[in-house]
Length: 119
Image 1 (cartoon, helix red, strand yellow):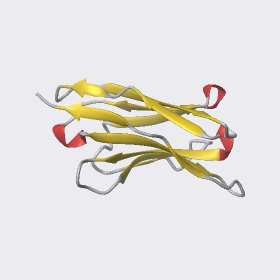
Image 2 (spheres, helix red, strand yellow):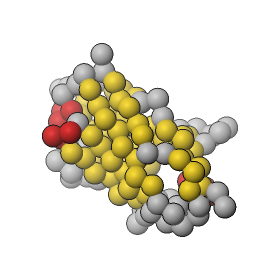
Image 3 (cartoon, helix red, strand yellow):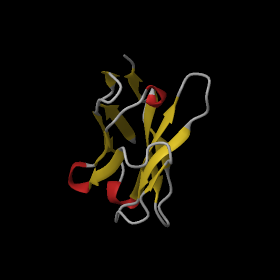
């Protein structure tokens, strides 16, 4: 069974930092593009950051550009997101997503980790 497990969320003050991790199992990790999405209460899920396996085409939402950094370690089947200079509007549940590259079929989601930015 494919499983994506997020961790690293929590409560942080504005201006603080968090590092999210997502460990994947049950899939060929290097054949999947990895993304972080987030969803605030009452709002639709939005793409935050995206990284294909080679690292080319890395994408960030305008709202987090310059503050968040996505990375991956294929040897550990893990994707990370370093979040700096956090703002209250970053408060959301953050979800890890794996989408198959090329001929690889699959689109999988983790269960999410809560990030709360509040003073």
